[in-house]
Image (tube, rainbow, N blue to C red; front, side, top):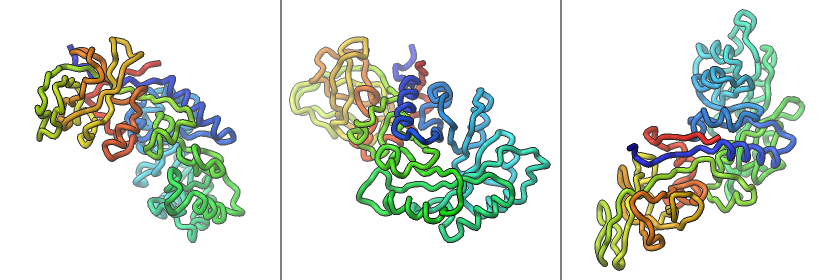
Amino acid sequence: MERPILASIDTKALRHNLTRVRELAPTAKVWAVIKANAYGHGFAAVIDGLASTDGFALLDLQDARFLRENGWQGPILLLEGVFSAADLRLAFELNCCLVVHTENQVSDLEAFDLTQHQAKPRHIYLKMNTGMNRLGFNPSNYREMFHRLHAATYKVSHMTHFANADRVDCLPSVGSQDDLFKATIAGIPANTSTANSGAILWHRTALGDWVRPGIMLYGASPSGRYADIAHAHLQPVMHLRSQIIGVQALKKGDRVGYGGRYQAPEAMHIGVVACGYADGYPRSAPDGTPVWVADSDSTGSGVICPSVGQVSMDMLTIDLRNAPWAKIGSLVELWGAHVPVDDVAQMAGTIGYELLCALAPRVPKQVIK
């Protein structure tokens, strides 16, 4: 019998979340961001669940190849462009749009013989650095790069990225970045792409022609706080579940796990769950991190039981005082429908993005259609 941990990936939830993106940004087209193996969910799921997107945005040429080999014929955007001139041929053979953010990339595109290689499309997203100071051209030389690419017969669109779309107390603000972006491209008509998940959720005056939702497609919050996305009615896509594989009866004063961090305040039972940091569960999770325990073999009803003791490589332990019925074989959910991944991440001092992307390869995935 296989170890009972399983990550279920719900393609209906993906479809629902994409629909919510379109409702929040009704005039924009959608680049569905699926970098990092679709935020840990796997490409097989998103090809099905996000099939109605206008385009997919990702990082790696090999991932673009996978999409093409598995039937995707729509647009693909390489979010960091290509990393060498030698990759341009393959990128265009795969019919990819490229983000361009360095002068070296501009020069490589100028030197590339599009006619000889019959390359198409010739679609470039030119990235402007409006304050995040990560990738992109400064406004002072952005227009020069645009005109160079346009002169080389490429179709060029405008792009920037908001640094603080999930915050209201940080600089640069969405408003300041959007104002700088619009002032810089004034008089250069072209499609624009600016809005990430945070902007779609909270800054819908700065959407642009193509939005780029990422984390919200997977039912988690860009801010790291699940309460912040309650209004959007998103659905979790990944449900990480396991089982109790052991139960221990403790006396008052007994300690639990490596380092004995948790001490039983009274006689109690703890459950040992088949999930640990080697599966991608955060080792930094403190006592009290929520774990849901089903009251039967179904997933319909149950209760939250707090974690106790240090998370170990293959196991974690939970306080069963809320679930006296729990036994070996009882189903638990580490995150998903009953425990938002953002809640686990917040307890552990990180963000939901990291937990989803860090799901270990050894955890089997089941795609639910």
